[in-house]
Amino acid sequence: MTPDEFRRHAHELVEWMAGYMENVENFPVKSSAVPGEIFKKIPDSPPLHSEPFNSLMRDFDEIIIPGITHWQNPNFFAYFPANISPPSILAEMLIATLGAQCMIWETSPAAAELEEKMMIWLRDMIGLPSGFEGVIEDSASTATLAAILTARERITNFSINNEGAEHAGTLKVYCSDQTHSSVEKAVKICGIGRRNLVKISVKEDFSMDPEKLKEAIIHDKKCGHIPCCVVATIGTTGTTAVDPLRAIGEVCRENDVWLHVDAAMAGTALILPEFQWMLDGREFIDSFVFNPHKWMFTNFDCTAYFVKDARALIKTFEVLPEYLKTRTRGKVNDYRDWGVPLGRRFRALKLWYVIRSYGTEGLRDKVRYHISIAAQLSEMISRETDFEILAPVIISLVCFRYNPAGNNEDKTNALNEKLNHLLNDSGKLYLSHTVLNGKYTLRMVTAQANVTLEHVEKAWDLIKKTARSIKP
Ligand SMILES: *Cc1c(COP(=O)(O)O)cnc(C)c1O
Image (cartoon, rainbow, N blue to C red; front, side, top):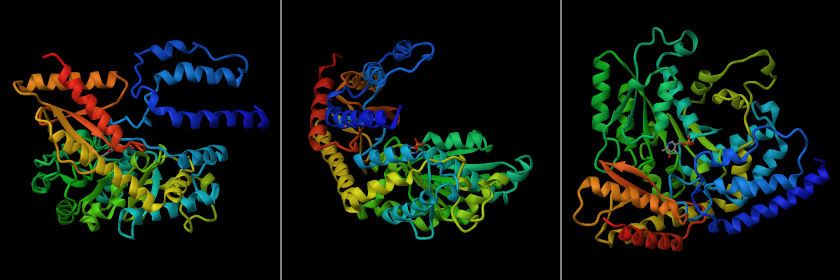
């Protein structure tokens, strides 16, 4: 492709992109593709000779789009959002065009220094203490792995890095039974072992019970085990429950245990002064992760990972082969030492574009609106006697179920599962589910970038109508 051809196709593509944004509501939210359907449509071997760009775009429209679930459709209420925004997409175009590998400062000083500054902006926006330093990772899962590895090294005096785990003893990691599965994945792969992950029970509001945490840590110490890390969550995946940081932090400090905070989704709400209560006890935090690629209008991937002691993180990850030695080492941030990958995309650029395009007040307005919609939805649901709310509504997630009179729990669960599938198969909206105290629970997240109260009202009408039309 010559630069001139590129220019022509790029203009066509931008037309496609803008058209998609205008029309995304008309696509079925959840793809109705069946397993193997797309695979079958793609040739078994690559073409020998160049194909025209037009035929690529034709196949994109005909083969790919029907197999896409439209996360940017405002009727996407499932899981958590993966919000994008026009300034973020434009920055992604520039990032792709520069194609810079931002592994060390010297391989693109602007990328390293913009990242350093963006992490300061974000840190101050969400109210973390000023000593914290940040780095952009690909996902919250990676950041949590980095946190547990750093905690492991700190508690063993950096001996596992050097000698292996043979003489390290049994390390223990703690989280609530509502914690995201990324914690289990991290303990599995970091050599601590899944059976040394202690799941602490929760209170009625699904937040970790700090008394139970304290008991578990004291018990483990008595048994000669080594408590290493506690993962507290601000905004659990199931219900967005908020673990009590201060009480948990005090237990951590008394017992010399690392405190990692997973705020992957709810971290964005911390830009609102009225949600700063979630960070009460922030002085106890050792590491903290949240995902601008969920609720902060920044394309995946963009995870912000903050640490109180950057030296411990770097000491855990740094290696220094000859070919990466530079004259600036020690004077600058070489982010390859701050996590697993060597190669890194220039992700700070999209944060810069997003934050400057909206302004912090503009971001606050959007997030506040999403939270207000959830509160209104919760009121609408509460008014109906055959529906019930199943968890406190804290930010932008409502957990509920259909519960008409006269059913036992099994029947009610089956009814709600059926309701979920009927709604999702309609293509008009997309909900996901969880199980709370044995109850099949519908989760409705009102945080898609372009969702409005009208979308939610319409969806709620469809939910009621569909539920009440199911034959017992
Ligand atoms: C989404 C989520 C994660 C996982 O995030 P990734 O960036 O996809 O790894 C972890 N924890 C919580 C609380 C989440 O909401």
